Image (tube, rainbow, N blue to C red; front, side, top):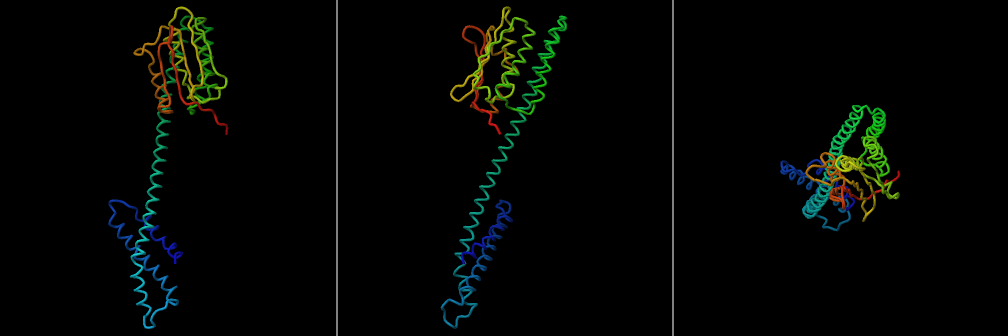
Length: 310
């Protein structure tokens, strides 16, 4: 009998698919399930009577129809209860599945929105860097310094080639990011001649960690423009990478006049903060402050992660 009941559960399942719970259709849904419960009761009782009638001891004068109706009335309440119990489980599972699907869809939409936002931020960053570099080349050409101008054009073409080839990536290894920064600073060193010194303090074990692409460029650019580049004597830029409490800490320090929050940063720092917030939420931070002694130090901190080889 319970095998028969299991087969009959296809009735509430089919009706639940045909009549999902909707406020505007609640009356029709209830009517459909009441009819389904009655049909299920008739089918289950009929199967039970057909199987049990020859085996049940009963008075000889009790006809089949009377026995059938008596069994139907006896089993009706139980069958209706079981029908709606099964139906409740079906609807509960369907609701759970719909909730999970909505959550997955919202997660996909959030990821797409974040991707679009990061793309827009980088589209602002790349022209910002390009225009500054072209302006420096223009100054060299105007001063008839063709050797340095040619050198800068060669370096700039290499930098732009890397930018264009990696436009779909959000993260690169620290080693790749530092290679890009080396090219960028080589451009600046041509512009400043021997007045710009670069110091590196990079833990070799961290070179394969993942970082947001171009995360250091606006920090280094600010260190050059607002820090070391403003000195009449030799300017110094120190770039460091270290691990601390499960985070990767990147810092850019200069020996310039110091940090003035109201006048420095601009698009570069704003985009950097926005990218970090989008990628890591509250797990990342960007701090810019006056360094001990002189100059400015910009520090980026976010969760340390390494590339997983396929």
